[in-house]
Length: 157
Image 1 (cartoon, rainbow, N blue to C red):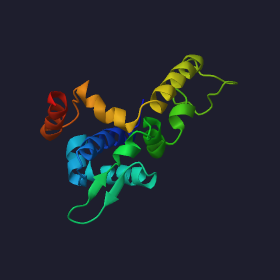
Image 2: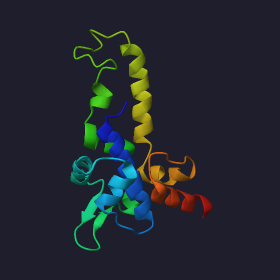
Image 3: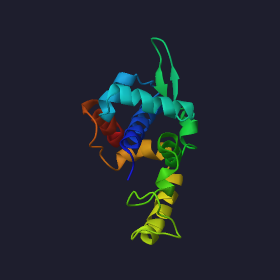
């Protein structure tokens, strides 16, 4: 459903958000390690997210990526998707056809309109804060031991 870049972006933002809630800034190497994304790819994704004011970065020895905890409650998952993939998730054809529209629909068009509407609603009502706190409900499987330790910390505190 999401592009690979978008998947990595959501994972990166979730990781950065959990660290930001603990007052930590995250180095790009930590994001790479915990998202499973190649370094150059991660840098590009984080660049797009920084450009859209979803994540911030500071340079220097105490620098890194962070998200303001107050801002986390305002940033929607839909903002992340738009920053990385634009609006293609909401406008593209389910089968990837270029000429699919309501006048010339593909075989899945009408069904996909409903799914797209529900997906859009879900993304627009899920905040970055929700993603960070969601770690206490669903154990992430995409990340390494360090991320799991953070998760375990959330569960047991």
